[in-house]
Length: 84
Image (cartoon, rainbow, N blue to C red; front, side, top):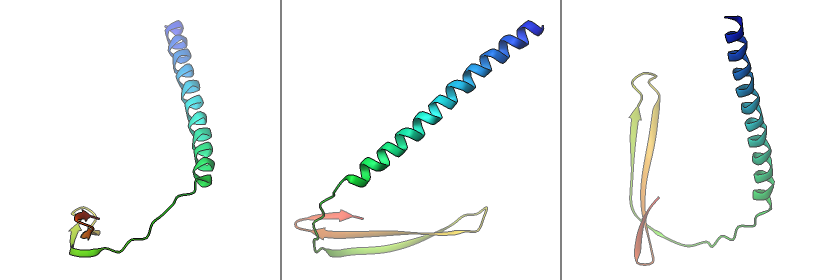
C-alpha cells in the first residue's frame, strides 16, 4: 500500500514540475512579446465618417444587480457601412 502511495506521489510531483516549467515559459514569452510589441510602430490614418445609426441597451445582472450598457454604432465610410 505504501508503495502505491509513493508511486502516486511521484507521478503528482512530476506533474507539478511540468506545470511550473510551463508557467515559467509562459511568463518569459509574455515578457518577450511585451517588449516586441512596444517596438512596433503602427501607422494610423485618420478618416472622417458619417454616423448612420446609434443605439444603446442596458442589461441588468439578475444575481448582482449590476448594470452594463452596450452601445451599437453604425458608420458609413466611402460606400460601405461598418458596425463599431
